[in-house]
Length: 405
Image (cartoon, rainbow, N blue to C red; front, side, top):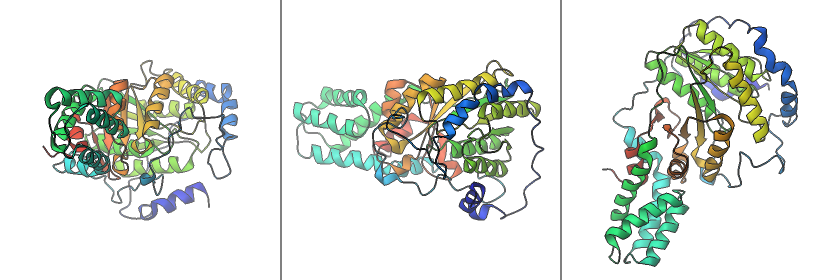
């Protein structure tokens, strides 16, 4: 079965079902010859990378190739995903992407595993105990084990020591302090991804390792911007995976966004050039570019992303205007390492964290915020289009602390 047939099987009823879609936009014009500087100067890179793939498209990762992006921590066993391709709404129009009255409840439910793991440990620790030095040390260990990070754990225990030292303290009192201190850590980084209307288009380069949810996040962002009345073009820059190209095309159909794509294995920087040329020609408001996440080491990753940026700047010296790193919350401490690598490689300007509903490691977002101070633009707690929402520090802090007010 071909990769395209596999993608169609995964999407099931969405192919061929529902109302007829509008005719697809005309294919983009061929890029000028200069765009394919990448094809000549870096053809060796693609050969090298392709040799790291098995017949079924998976990488052959050797111990030496590394741990640059994958880290050494094991994934959250409770967070296995049935498929890399998430469901897409079946109707012709994407669902509303407004925040809605039920967002906090969905967020609280999505963070249940993280919240429960934390509060259950706190309850067991603080039952009929005074807040002495030993209790504070045990409390700090619990907070660190919840992936909140050493800095945040120390903030919380110091705040508790100031007000409740040598007194009995209830889990509810600890949750109150926890929510307050977490919000203080997160508030400075809770910033929206602002689309500059003066740029036509505003270019968002989306990066991250495979499985983090890049392509699905792009589709959800396209739906959001479409609902805001913006014209969106998507660039299928993950040219190593046919399924990723097909997935983005379906998102384009469902959201009304034009998709610029090439065949599997095509040069990613040439695709980026084509996509920007088409977005400019179409007077699009936003161009969102997908990228491959399977490059095995930092050197190849840097070369590929630098080449994309260099080619984009042949048309717009300021592009990309945002570099959005998509992180999978289920990877825990690995997400911290990914931030460090991608910041060095491509100058990440903001974060989106997905799959918070599938892990007990949601506290890692707090640790990342405390260490890197990068803007957190979006968080995701489910498969629905409206389960990706702009990040709000107070809501996240209350939800992870298990509080409703």
